[in-house]
Length: 293
Image 1 (cartoon, rainbow, N blue to C red):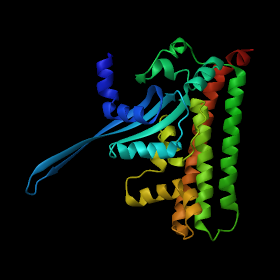
Image 2 (image 1 turned 180 degrees about the vertical axis):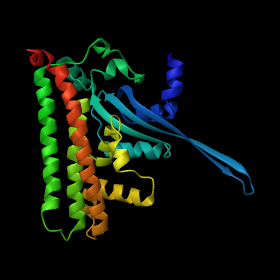
Image 3 (image 1 turned 135 degrees about the vertical axis):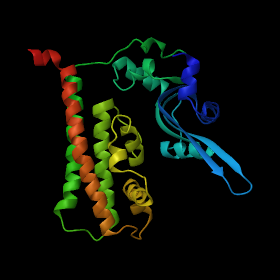
Image 4 (image 1 turned 135 degrees about the horizontal axis):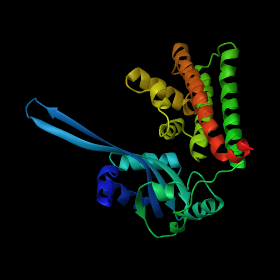
């Protein structure tokens, strides 16, 4: 596939997005982990007749900068969304160039496959060119770290969900929702490390769900947003911490919280099966010599 066809397929709203990103951060390079283009078309039959069409894009980007980004990552992603007139939603993963070089020299199984494999939207210089031939690192100690991280994250999530199930219902529904949110964050952090060996620096649950959606459809199938009611449940779960911090009035009913809790249990159980299965395949890769002996 040549560069022109890549651009046509992968880079909707490229020019506008690049101009914006260059204006708000010291860019070294941008790598496209995923891109989704949606075309919306509205035909109006009532006088005056017209056709309205608009392209919308969703990106997941690894952005490498010369200097640390001063703004909170969530605020920055919201700023990009609004400055792009709500036509482009960007999910950012950010590293500085110096940290990227250090991690790649040490051996980082999240960054190593990205540099040579995923499309590069922008590149300032060749500081990372020597890493293009690097491969993944396999070793029993790496597997053990993945296994331990997965075990700890899922144990914490199980405990949080058990607390909600084993005590009398609490008066404060928002507090129950906040505990559920914490449990789901732990599950997502576990999945991201098992599948990507990635430790995010931003922990909003909607962001974690989006990243997990790159290797499993569980967030979309268990927490869909097809109707207003489903969107409300997703909003309740993903924003419970902020609602508890900034609002004293209860916005959720016990019935709504119970339904979200059942979804969380389902997500935990299915994520556990998915992660355990992937962990078995990782053991064969990292420990093949040990298993053979």
